[in-house]
Amino acid sequence: MKYQTKIDEETLQDLINIETGLFFPLNGFMGKEEVLSVIESGILPDGKVFPIPITLDVEEDLFKRAPDGAKILLMYQGQAVAEVIIKSRFLMTDTFIEKIFKTVEMAHPGVRKEKERRPWRIGGKTKLLDVALLAEALKPETTKDIFRKKGWSTIVGFQTRNPVHRAHEYIQRLGLEVCDGLFINPVTGWKKRGDFTQEAVVTAYETMFRKFYPENRVYFAGLKTQMRYAGPREAVFHAIIRRNLGCTHFIIGRDHAGVGGYYGAYEAHDYAKKIGKEHNLGIELLLTREPYYCTKCKQIVTDRTCAHYETNRVEISGTIIRKYISDKAIPDETMLRKEIFDAILSCDHVFME
Figure 1 (cartoon, rainbow, N blue to C red):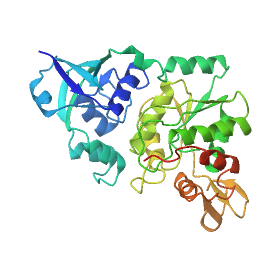
Figure 2 (figure 1 turned 90 degrees about the horizontal axis):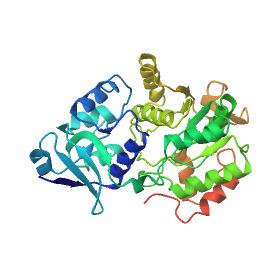
Figure 3 (figure 1 turned 120 degrees about the horizontal axis):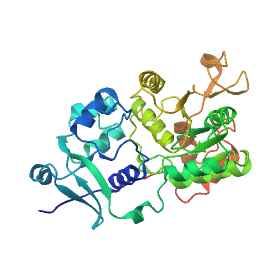
């Protein structure tokens, strides 16, 4: 008997990222055993670190009818793009969701996205049938070859969903002091409404590379995967992806992959240090503090290099920059370079709708 289920764009991208090795060590969608292990410890049953569940949601009828070992065709826009062999099944419950995101509030965009999916989940090894889908995919062998040709032996990865502002510039320059090359790898998949578009992020960085950063020391490529806004867990997930892409170092900043006030400012640091102490991540983590402009020191600093955090701090963040640009008001250049501001405003679409 033939079975099939429709998948959305985000699930298709997960499939592609499994196939390319971007999500190594995964070779398919997680089953019940893997998900239980991951949500409890951030570790797969085989002992490898992977703190985010990657799962396949299906219709209730298929979930109940298809036996273990059955082959399921995954249909995207009417085409069979992949198949999965059922190994196990489970329901994605609020208990699971709370362990992943530390909340079940619908105000959290990651929770809302997860709860809008079908709760019936099937795990098993996947096989991509339409290899044409890999044509434009970011592949580990490609980035590793590029780094090798550039002569870089140490590469620091930088995750972002925003155009470059002065706080990010400060951290990126720290990375360039430590490593041979800087790999800026912004998320270009699903993001919440009000986040910057891919066009705005790419245009801003192209301007930065052309006018400010040293030639041949920076590489830029988008990462097609959805933001999950899972805070500490997603910070380590992002590190694993960059390790797979060939980075030797990865920057985890303040409230990495956080949203609202759901996670502590440096909770991602604590989680990364704990899991890195107990398990080999295969990548060195650079845990950076929050950069801000100090009106007394008259430069970008952090609380580790400045005595005026409580009295002279001018906060710089993606949220603040989004507000300025939404109002078409240029921020002070201590927050955002005028060239970057102008580049962002030149875009046809600046914010996700």
